[in-house]
Length: 315
Image (cartoon, rainbow, N blue to C red):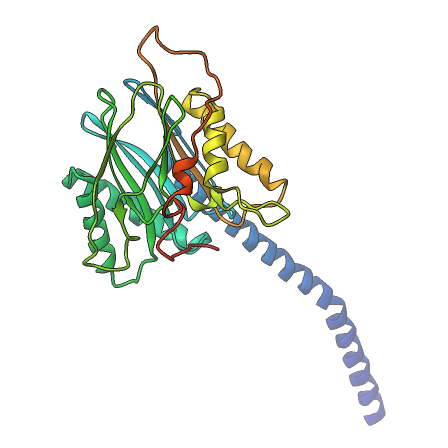
């Protein structure tokens, strides 16, 4: 009797072990499938967040008066730490291109907050320097320790071509004159969110008929080729000048294409963002688009336009 019971018990134990062994692969498959579903949901959420970013930065192409404006950003990850914005400020046009320190989810979360601050401060302060100062104070008072943010902020009059701007830690924007001269727009102040009492200045220029303004993030000029050579501001100015006063969108994509061609297939290490503003000539006076011989001598003097007072983001 006892031997029979032990035999039955041993049989049941072996059967249970076989059942457990057989079900282990099934449980592993179920867990793997669950992980894949979670990964797909995460990818979908990040994709949707990236679409929100693009909508916040829209529109890509704007025409106001004689101004043609085009902007684009290419993140190295799904979410960008760069942003740009073209928006209405009454009769004027607001122009902004920023670079939030870091990339991916962290920078992406802060972008929405920065966009809100940009809207509020530019409506309350007509001068770009005053608006940048207000944004800086708000960021410095945040309890959540926001990342440093470089920002080019401009206010353009589409009728007169006048541009007031403040360059807070961004690479100096380039103003390509129709006759080939290049001007570096570096007036402004430090990056936002670093020093609450930081001072900012407003610079002023006028875009004449046929002139083109090129605002860019450091990721564009820091595109490297296989020899670790950077694309640089001189090549950027030459590429933009080669567009010869073409429509802003055409100039933008030909310039970005030149940077990526220079890299020779090497993937960018940082987000690429470019904003191009072109002032058309008066009706009947526009010349056919021709390459412009760009005078690069201004870029060889003094501080390199891409310099950020010793602060480099995403290097």
